[in-house]
Image (cartoon, rainbow, N blue to C red; front, top):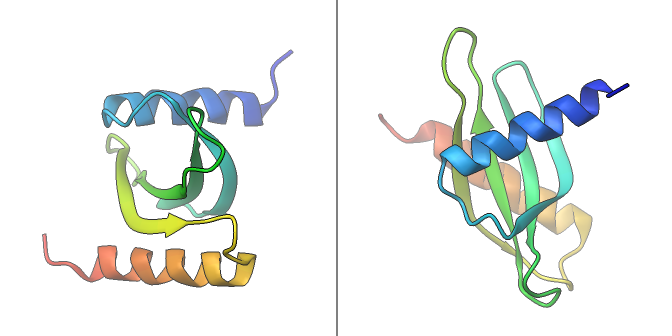
Length: 99
């Protein structure tokens, strides 16, 4: 039997594929999930040394989910606090942009 996390992970992979993000990326960590959006850290399966990236997935009710790669690079030297601060600033900038 599949858990809801398994279903969510498969749905997330489908969203990333629809957004035409490189399929070599893997979900490394979940930063946050709300009713309207989720934020994940992605790693490159090609290289452990490559910086990680963050993806914002908007999933408003009654709409197709959309994925946005945030302009954040996370290196191995970045602390969790620094990582989360950079990502949250990028999320705020994303939502502050006029459509």
